[in-house]
Length: 107
Image 1 (cartoon, rainbow, N blue to C red):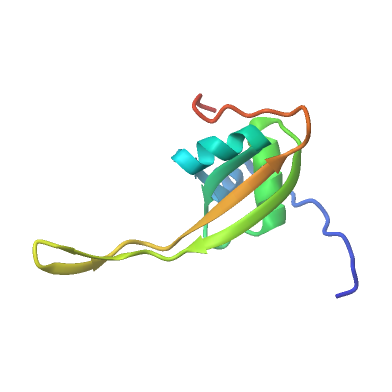
Image 2 (cartoon, rainbow, N blue to C red):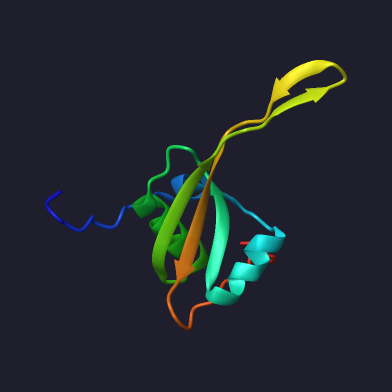
């Protein structure tokens, strides 16, 4: 690695909506919102610079950091039939100091 900074990604509005699918509202995500963090479900092919640009573009906030993880889908059995939930990607977005984001209201 040469240590170069990534240029901010230029995204169209429809790509922003494709990258950021929905906020994840759970007990854990509610508790970390006190630390200026928000959790979103994002597309599997989204990169961290794309996620940062999409959140800043859609919600008008400054993003400090983005952490991601891939959540594997569970194998489930319903009425004797085996099935599998889809894999998805989560993004934990840390906002700059003084920034806030209320995910319970619509865009």
